[in-house]
Length: 159
Image 1 (spheres, rainbow, N blue to C red):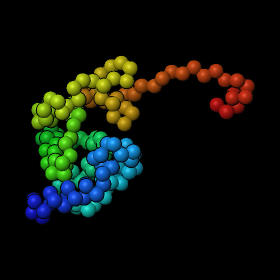
Image 2 (image 1 turned 60 degrees about the vertical axis):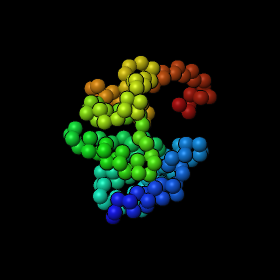
Image 3 (image 1 turned 90 degrees about the horizontal axis):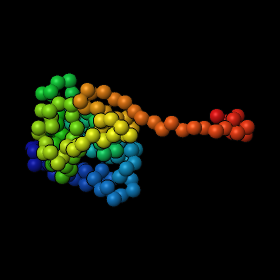
Image 4 (image 1 turned 135 degrees about the vertical axis):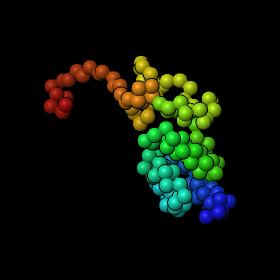
């Protein structure tokens, strides 16, 4: 498909689904709505020229986060370039980049990167899907609140 025809079709498909780009809509933050929208765009566009983008949109997107990786630095940079190209053609700018590889971060401006660690209560890391990802050592952890439960006789049977 010619590039300009692809661009027009892709923009049209995304524009049909404002829940994918208009954060003022209540359904913007609904996981099921966003996933359905990206699946529809992926299917409508076929994206046969961009299989890695299709896979990322269909299987590695959570609301407005694309959480995807690659087996090598070169593959990560190639995927990054494809995502920026395809989504950019629809007027979607990718922000809040985070990576444990500097070569990926070198391809985006500093203002488009996660500028600092986003801790739960302490420690370095980027919050993703309720987990904290620490790019420096490529590990995941999580935090939880330690709540004291005082059970009464009535509530004791329900714990």
